[in-house]
Amino acid sequence: MANSAPPRIFSRSRRIAALRRARVRQSQRDAARYVFDDMVEDVLERLEFMRFEPKRALVVGDITSTLALSLRGRGAHVDERDVASLDEELPIGGSPYDLIVSLASLDRVNDLPGALLHIRTALAPDGLFIASLIGAGSLAHLRAAMIAAQPERPEPRMHPLVDNAAASALLQRALFKRQVVDSRSLTVAFPSMDKLVSDLRDQGLGNVLAQPASALGKDELQRAREAFRKGANKHGRVLEALEVLTLTGWKD
Image (cartoon, rainbow, N blue to C red):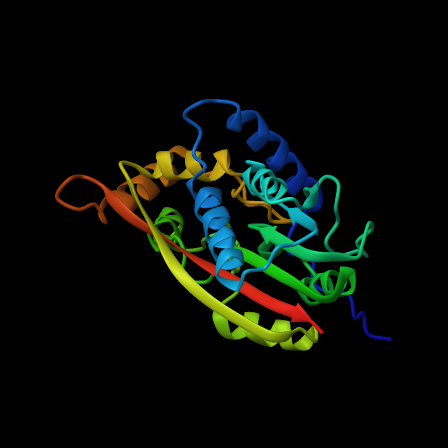
């Protein structure tokens, strides 16, 4: 009998370790958190536009806890979870919720179709699901730098990412209604590749592949840094874009 289990691309233990390191880094005043700031602001604007006032919400993955704080300020009872306390590939306890929000989390699960089904099951009738994740097309300069580091046989160092069409199909497969997928570009200027990598680690967005590549050697790292700098503008900054996908769906 053929094995129907999804391929193991990501490591849950490495995700938990990255989250714990990010929590420590977030305690520093200068820690990067702009990805989550953008996602939280977007979610709140959508709820305001839809005039949706949740009474019971589940927030997954927000390392800043600002979304839960804002929702509580609106009178909602909020359950906060992270990868250490919630496995998206298993049924979600504590349901039903009339709002489930996932931030920068679902792009790193092995069984994304299964995770979406569990989320839909955990919603109350007429419940709303919103997910923000890093989508395909992100970090083009960093990807080019990793290839330049090992031009003959580059090892996998960056995550496969979901695009708009795949996200729409996944929402339909999970039986969400009135589903919408849109994207926006978050562009950030970096003086170096090292600063970009540091910012990603601050936000728990580093590599959590199940089979991580070996560390770059000194010469390989130098090639990567030089390749990254080639994309710099006249001010010496590399404008790196992160494509943020937002998935919205309802349970009828």
